[in-house]
Image (cartoon, helix red, strand yellow):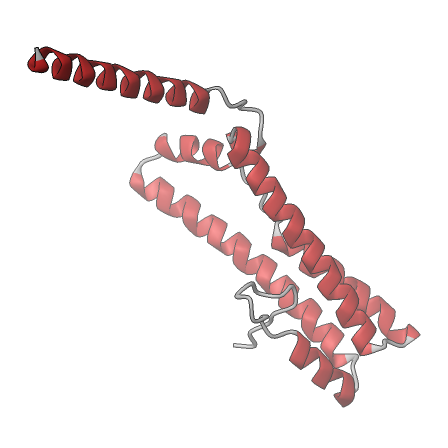
Length: 169
């Protein structure tokens, strides 16, 4: 009699675990697939939330920097060029990664390498453009403002690089 009760208990436990895992699997696939970059549900919303927080922090950092620099009217044009160039270069690729992967699957290895080199050249060109805008803005600043810019352009302590980080190498 004990053997039968144990066997029934084990079967009931296995059925419960299988049913629970089936429900969890169904819920995982029930997420909508209308998000950015082909991502669905939570993953898409999570990416949007991170991007929104990053953009808000970047805008806050730029406004704090502008306030600390106490810019003169003749420096405003260089500031506007700097601010717009740094913003445009940060997320300008806007690549649909799923589509890019699909495209890469159709290419052979030399073609993929050429495509990756072309994308690298585009990123480098954006970085050169950004560096030139920073240098042009920096040249407009007197030594006191340059010191403020140097101190504020360093990465922050949270590990997130600030919007105006520049490596002169």
